Length: 333
Image 1 (cartoon, rainbow, N blue to C red):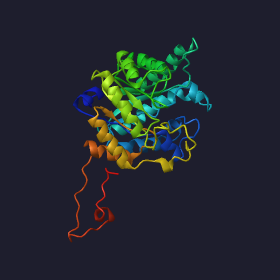
Image 2 (tube, rainbow, N blue to C red):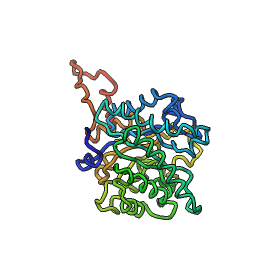
Image 3 (cartoon, one colour):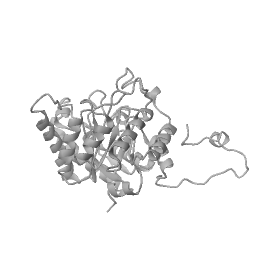
Image 4 (cartoon, one colour):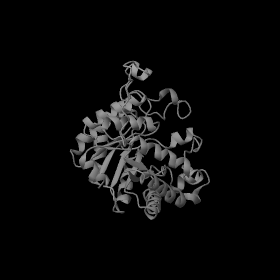
């Protein structure tokens, strides 16, 4: 039985996987707009292939393709009757690929778009959405731990922690921040949010999505200072260039069809991984736009490539590739 996520984090940084929805949309398996995960049941081989690419690149965790796999969200595309099938199959697919290496499976849940702190019945409705996904994934696995992600409402993130902790599995939860200075919708700073989530019982807290590495790293470091070692901190930036003026890659006209020019070189993610490790961040991953090449560069920096590369050199003493001639490296920009 593989070591669990908390045991691995106790030994040093853990490398997460990359982005699924946008990459599968580019490959023709996910519809832009709703970004719902019917690929799990309609094209399971395509999903397995992406999992496998991340595994081969060095990822130590594979997340189930269950972002937006809640009843309300699937209902927007007429697929409310597939909630159970999607959540169960996603765990099975991730588990099958993870067994080809030494990776853990994280059951993934996300914001529901149903949380409204101004509506009395909203919290219980969201609890029900979370419970259904959690129970479906438990029945098919179970996963090794949970990741709840991309919460802008701290209240919704706390509801996720409440429901996920009830399953007895370790819980990781990450917030997303649309603006700088970063604040949850309720006004809490990243440090305040991290402290409240840790106090609520989350085993790992952090930040993911929306921001590129340059904007997200300071947020994660603030969280490190706020929790003072009580729980590990996670950071999973997007592989797109954002700025302090526009820290949310989804807010501009480039999203989702003109993002390619904004894509970061793999060395940018490698540098992020090194800086994150030095900043005391334990779970180092990536999000939208990050593909195997980014994860691979991060794995090299962190010493987590699953296979050693062949030694090679020209017996003539002369360069025999432009890579060698120009002395390029994979992990530098």
